[in-house]
Length: 90
Image 1 (cartoon, rainbow, N blue to C red):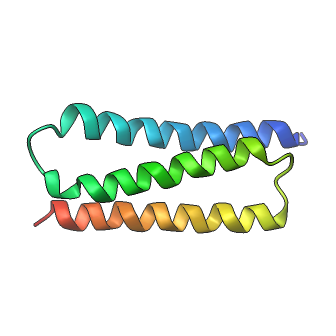
Image 2 (image 1 turned 180 degrees about the vertical axis):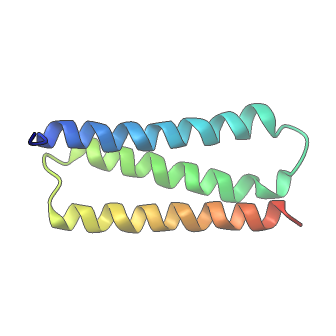
């Protein structure tokens, strides 16, 4: 089975959108009163994930160059999430 480029783009975008939605639900519904110090780090990861989804939709193909940008975006979002976990465990 050969993956179509559009199917791959939509799959990656769906995974990123699911991650963004779960962080958004946590930020705006579950974390209203407690752990407000992690808000900035989680919001930063939310914005990076949103930027990657927009980047995927505007790129016609996923080439090696765009994969490097996506990898960098995933690393930045993961570092923001790691910072949030570290701040939340204090």
